[in-house]
Image (cartoon, rainbow, N blue to C red; front, side):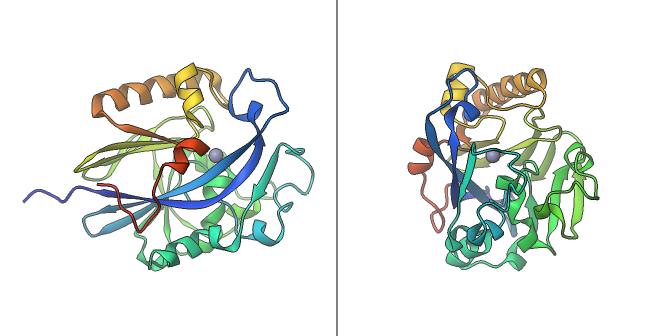
Length: 252
Ligand SMILES: [Zn+2]
């Protein structure tokens, strides 16, 4: 018997105001952009996965908690309401943390792994290189302080039929993307390998700790997207996000 095709759900998890020059290399600074923060649910057979968790809930009450030392300057301003927290969005969809078989993190920046504190007892799937870039100790960001059971991935991994993690380092050492092949079409969730359509179409990348690696990852995503005829879903593209329907709508 063929396994049922996966289905994809979108969660809106708030936004950040960012200078557009942070998102598209080569632009002059001085223009603000409202970058949506997204999470995704993937139903595959009996399993339910969350891909990325949004920002730490603490930012609702303390928007400056992210940056007590002014590390980001005024370049990133989180905009988070109580309903933008991952647990609140799950609840709107009639779901609880306990319903998640695993929380898959593209990487451990605050806007993707910030909800981990509220998902403390869930299995967290992450690339080994990303986990190793965040060793326990004084430098660990507060959203990573909780205890987590980790499933460490090296390279690509099929999570379920039609649900494939793709190693796409460059933005961070262990960045990964997700390909979801539903019955009605494939979706390639790039996460921060590609912030916006402008990055994708102009060949001007976003922020990369390793630009060469990042370029290779984008090239790889282009190939995967072409082969799978996938709809490419960017991480922080407000125009594209405005066209997406959140859960309870399911794609596929
Ligand atoms: Zn991001």
